[in-house]
Length: 367
Figure 1 (spheres, rainbow, N blue to C red):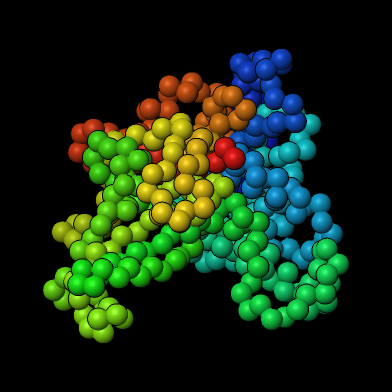
Figure 2: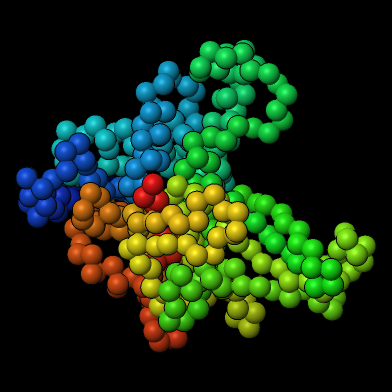
């Protein structure tokens, strides 16, 4: 709906849908200070709408974005537009309805030509771009504050530290992986850490998230032309290599690699494999020196891809709000049963049929 005129017609139609949702939840059950607003689709923006809804229901993220909104006005950027949108949802007079995220989409298209068209985009690429852009904006603002010699706590900061401070994006989403390599000749283990804001895992047919994560940490043997240069032996040696999680994030964003490039087709195809994602998750592939190995996670949101390929199809979001689940399909919002989540695991038959399958999962830590 590129034209704005559709919005009023749309809100009339959605008004009926919205009041039905309000009735279904019931006035006593409706969470205080909560608003469920669909987002208007501007032509191809379901990839964006679904990710924004998922992030809105990642409460630590929402709270930080709303807190950012209450700071003194800054010049417009992607984060100010996101803060305005979240604030607009959070302060609506009505409990349910539809909102056009026009300013945010306009800004997004202005800032990144990848999204400046009417083609379907990849929700995971958008999530990645959004989180990294917000972190960059916050780091830049922090740098400006330091240069002006004042930090929020009134400290005069010394410029010795070259690494930028972690932002609240990092505090919420960043975890650390450790890449352990063990030389098979001298048994020396060397490890290298790398940070992530989301984890991308390979998918296989008829498996579960736990299985995918285990696969992520499988031991790989480096041999023949892939031998590893061992500093101790001072030569190339056979080695075992594996990836483990060293620091678990507050919110774990898991991206299922459902789009695979097929050489014979010269295009990406969708793997609609059935991958079960539980409502509760405990990670087992943590390293020996992990800071919080026993963290329990609860599923809070899922971005679902509907269709057969990355550039066609549609995205929706299912989110947990208080004790119930909602489905956001652009401007439509519906309450769904927790059992219905099973419908988004994927298909057991390998035929590349149209499927509605979990694509990005957001798990929030209990502690």
